[in-house]
Amino acid sequence: MPLSVRTTAVDNLSLEPLGLSVFEEQVYLRLLDHGLASARLIARELEGCPDQVAAALDALTELGLVHREDFAGRRFRVIPPDVALSELIGQRRRALNRLQVEADRLREEAARRGSASTQVVEHVVGAAAVLAVVTQMQRAARDEVLMVDAPPYFVGGSQPNESEFVALAAGVSYRVIYHRDALASDEARAAMRQYVDAGEQARVHAQVWPKLLVADRSMALVPESATDPDPQRRLLIRSSSLLDLIVVHFEQMWQRATPVESFGRAAGESEPEISDRDREMLGLMAAGLKDRAIARSLGITERTVGRRINELMRRLDTETRFGAGVRAVQRGWISG
Image (cartoon, rainbow, N blue to C red):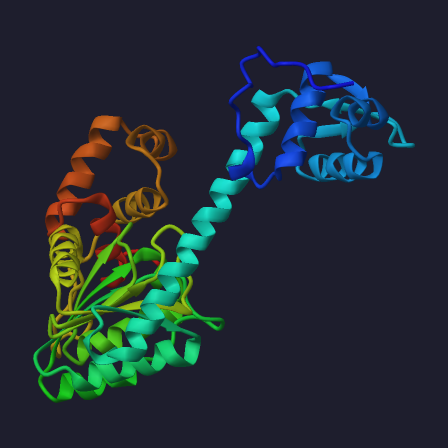
């Protein structure tokens, strides 16, 4: 039976960009006319070889455009185009995106091999490679190191930074912002005390991000991804407008962070005492309780709680409750 002249909306439809051959497209369009048909019927209408039609239907099934209606594979049902074609287009788009990413990676790799020393952005992959770059950047610094100490860390937690003590002794300035999670353990807090006593300027911020290291404002090391940071995948960024933005971001975070006071005290210098009630109030505040809950817990008015906390914040020289909690721990008023 010869093919009839088509008058449907799919006359000029071409599915070749989706990976279909001309014959597979003809089989699909014929099945689209019927909705449900056997391979034998389609072969008869297309005046084609049954085995060739069966192979085309298998390919269409694999692509998700048609559905095998019975185990024997005698009848096939077309899947609605608005569903099947949209999914196939999505798959092709994702494949093209992956191809583009791979092409970009190969281009970057070729450029890096051609002139690695002039690359603005360079990938650093692997714990050993990252630690080597961190050490080299600090050893090469002559004036200033800016750092954000934040999770995630390598397996085993934060690593001791011996390079900082060497650089501090050589007169290099260190400004470090600690994420509160970076000071979660007694060991981490003790390490920070050593750095601060050696000359580090430290501040704490509850939500500081991302982890970063900047040496002499000429080189920075940042996570490869801000949304899903991997400690073993970093970007080394050299002098550029991108590096300038990173430094500006650090300075903005530094202004919002709470300063850490020196942990050393002169001989005979004592810390003003606070009452047990104030100490209990600070502990509840540091635990995240609101004024109403604190007042209920202590059996006092909410207004009294607010007034005492404001007074304690003034004594601790901080404008935020988080900062008050940090400094209360530093001064030994409450346990960390």
